[in-house]
Length: 615
Image (cartoon, rainbow, N blue to C red; front, side, top):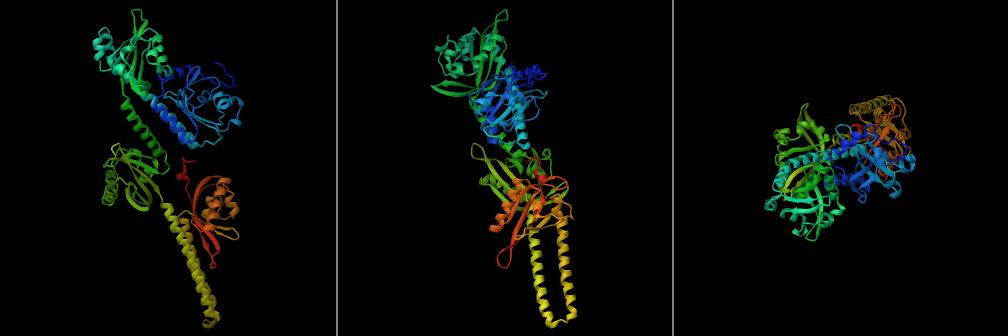
């Protein structure tokens, strides 16, 4: 294998790696819907035109499933990017082919022929640590690939490995189930009447030409042919097989003397003049003479098309749905049946409940949250099974028992029914978002607004008192009046400051005309400043990258123009500590007596923990 990349692309244990790959019997096998679904899901998830699953053999790359690259199923291993990708145990990313070492851009399929600019591949790694292939996505434009994207692509590779292992297990089961039929067929080889009445499809192919010597009624029915094909080579009797891998597999069985077991494999056969996709469990069993030389091959097959199609649809949709639930940043789960059994629950939902996944999976909501307080809630969910309608709520206040006592919180929820084939509700998918901090922040903003309204009223009252004092209060008593008003304002401000500090929030006031920023110590801390140092508006936005800065300024401008409430999430890098924090901010615009914008005020708090695993 010639290598022109200048990089050693052969691992020290490559022979063992290839041996591990071949133990899965996956090379040069026909397309299978489960692998096609994974490739399709990868392309759709990353919104890229090409996704494929490949396995790296000794000198070539076998593409098991592909979206957008259907014309390629084998490519030389020489200089292939997939060959480079299996050198790493992490995701390999080339985010712009125009800015990499030319040696790495040598893959003719992607660079010269298709002109793609982006490539990312996650290795498919066995339990023994052998990297046997990749799950790859390719794009026509340069793009960034986040840690979150890499993690999801690695999970796709794990799903592929699970499918391979299930396939091997199924083959072994098929071997056990079919060997008895093979042995029985061998014993009755000369009894055509027994072959004809066998409940499974049986044929005997003679010589390397694979001439059909025996074909019972069942296999003729499966093939969609009559007994007129007996005596003809298989590729002549079934010409549609020429573009499929089965003739090659049969030739390998004949030359190696090793049986081949197919589990839930698809084939395309012309039946009733229509090309159909059908599914089989089968075995190609070599039949040898006394010298051990293969002279015939016996085919024993069972068609399982209807069962597989139905199951594949359910499994594919189920895996995609579960993947969406588990990867969601919101709390999501799936409940099954009227007992509301928790079938799936992601970590965010478990965090809301303050329970582990081990504590909730397989349990009924009735047992997880018993008591009179939750009976109405349970009845509401059960009504979905009768009404077939989703139920949602916004900022609903709830309380329930946890190991740490009664938990009270505000939450947004949506319960959506999932139907079975008969139109009945089989599952309920729940989406839950903790809005406690948001609700408290809104209330806190109202408190701040109330404080300033109260302050304005006190100042107005002071002016009125001073006016009256000119006529009714002796001059020597005016300082006392001023002191009383100032003391009332100081106490109100102290109470507000204490509330701010105890809630671990940062508050801010921006004078619209001057953009002068007044920030509390809590807000300065969120931006990485010391409590006693100045932080101007420019200082604050200077801790954001250009993308977040533009978003924040645009949102503030929109609020100042429309008067709509201000809410945005953004990231900052601390001025002193250089710590990256995610903040969420709420604000509102206050106008003066002439209706002109006066000041912009609001609160911000840290949501970094909630953002972990997203960016």
